[in-house]
Amino acid sequence: MALGLGGSFLPITVPAQDTDNQLRPPSIGQDNNAEMWRAIRQGIQGKVSIPDKKAGVLVQSEGEEWRSIRNGPVSNYGVWLILGTIAVLALFFTARGRIRIENGRTGRTILRFASFERFIHWTVAVSFILLALTGLNLLYGRYVVKPWMGADTFAMVTLAGKFVHNYIGLLFILGLTIMFLIWIRQNVPTRIDLIWLAKGGGMFKRGVHPPARKFNAGQKIVFAAVIIGGALLSYSGLNLMFPFTLETTVQDMQQTQLLHAIGALALTAVIIAHIYIGTIGMEGAIDAMWSGRVEENWAREHHNLWFKELDTQTETQETTNDPNARGTPAE
Image (cartoon, rainbow, N blue to C red; front, top):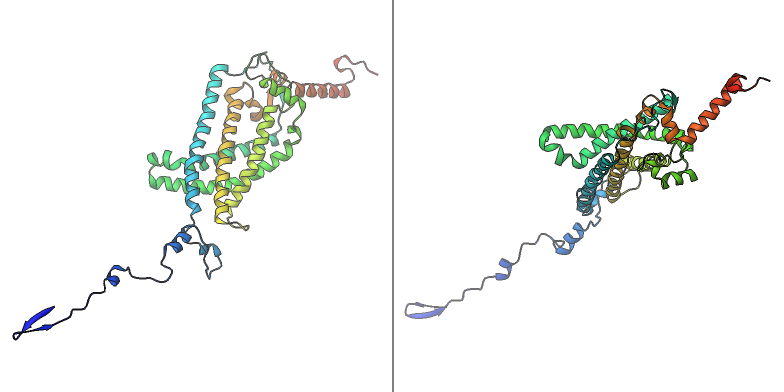
């Protein structure tokens, strides 16, 4: 650039600006690159000085996958499973009605379950119902309960439910263990169970009473589901209550939680069907676990082989105590 000064022109050079520095973003260090952040999002393990080495993971990307599965397929299919079970039972009740004692009540009852057996049954039953309600609240409460209860009240109820879930879970484990010990021998599958299953347990047609001992095939299936499912829930539940007690990772705990939720939903559906049969579905069934005694004709129709065993034992006892009983000649 030339400017006139005193009638003469002197050249003046203006230095060019460093446009590269203006366009280049400020550097924050050598690791400020896409590869590093991509690795962090993928869960790369860094180094930390504290004992908990899991803290070296800045972004646990599997957590989003766990959340999407829990709030997606598990939650959605769980609703369909529970509501579908209730719908099927309602349709069955509409079509079949209550299964009655066909030959009527005789007024005579026989002992089916002792007091201790009933106590263990109700311990497991009540504890499972509490576990199911508090667990379902954790999965669906924000959608079903929170809107009409309010956020603050829902938070307090859910927190209380969490403590109930944890402590009642220990009682459930104890009751489940005792139940397994006292009933496992009578719930071993036999060939008679195949006949019972082939005839649908007599559930679909009046006048059909397949043979059964103290526990029929349907009850054995429920027993197996409760023991196996309960053991699965107990194991996964203890792992969730005492996380990282074993050499487990965060991903292991997430998978354990999904397994716990899926198992709980499946077992809840089974128990709903069990409650139906034991209450409104079949006349006289609730007496077995309420008073421990059942109507004689109920036992004869639904557990005929068990009834014959009891009848034989009674005859033997009467004969032993009284030689003249049932027309037996005295020696």
